[in-house]
Length: 117
Image (cartoon, rainbow, N blue to C red):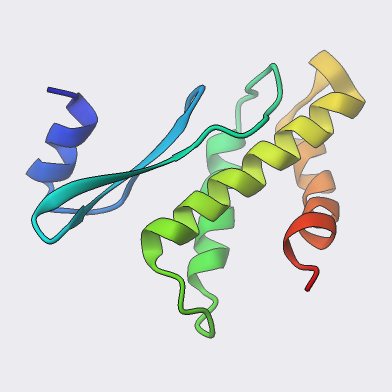
């Protein structure tokens, strides 16, 4: 059995976000393990600090009380935002991409793709 699934069961259902070629969000619903995946375009390079950026994005998304979006879906949106930002920054900076550059580009990504009505 997959270690991520075992961990979700053992911890009795927190949402677990696993970054990778395909990001996975695992959560417990009605006693069953559910998985959301994010496999959209991203950069060719994962730099250190991206997990910290993702945690901050997810925390911010969880703080929006007006949304009726559930916790796992907010985590999925966070992964989508991070992937988009990573690709955007990589397309400009190439192999010199780092977390600082991504943080500088994040407001542009949010304005252009995620906050427009």
